[in-house]
Length: 81
Image (cartoon, rainbow, N blue to C red):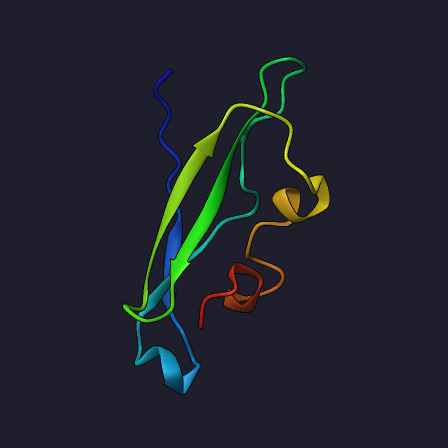
């Protein structure tokens, strides 16, 4: 499976982030089709101030968090900066 998910990024207003950009996504789900759920899990390295996403093909532990993304909760919902 190949998928692209474009995300807008904004500079974090948290001073500890040193102006790093964080993604704004409406949901971490790539596919919600029954039996074919695919979702992203943000992996944050607070020491290096970087992030990446792992892709999973299972049911997420917390659908509400996966569905929420980062747009409404700001970068804090990523646990980033």
